[in-house]
Image 1 (tube, rainbow, N blue to C red):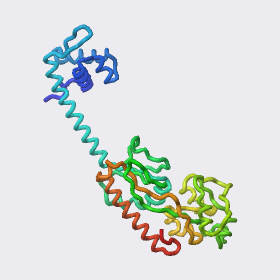
Image 2: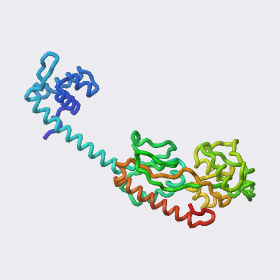
Image 3: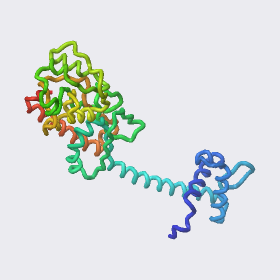
Length: 310
């Protein structure tokens, strides 16, 4: 079979639409072209085949016997081609795993650990989206979201991952190494600011120090990862979440001040559209993530000082 003798695919698609509607105008609307473009394509196809496919009756058209038989075969061939294309695309998509999470959690918690998932599942192409915007699964091509918030999230499969606490940290060389000895002394120290919470007040209440106002002056940090880096650079004392401060404390780049936690009203959640939960790529990441969460929880629970139980 010489495939070069086949008519152009665009001409066949135009003929199939015109045959299905038995109307050049309706075919033009479906294909977003003009009536004249459809008419031209059909005439060119008829000339190439050497046989009329439509009988013109004024402004109306109807399929000839030849056109009817040809339309049936062309439609079957186009459906087969569309099915084959869909299978290829779905196969590619099944290998692509898109995970969205908050920027700080992605940078400070997921990224240092993600190599383990990649080694375990080389069959998946992982895409990590770092964003503080809430994923709209109905509009965005995302498989999994790791959300930090109060929950719950309706119309999604939701699983709790990790509760969160916050505590103050600073560089060991901050203030020449003369670090605050009491929570009350910390209140008079330079404190870094976050724009979206009142956690300093919560922490001082947990420490038994009242009437300490939130910091009002200085750089206002939108992202927790940037806040953490400012503390590492010695710019002040930061109130940071446990999940993102672990590595810097373990390596000595930061020290924790006092064994007092401010419990957050937000937690980390695993969310995904219910139809995707059973997919191999989502199940693979979920299993790996839950294992890493449990390992992390075990590690900080074992460190009775300074971590304490969650």
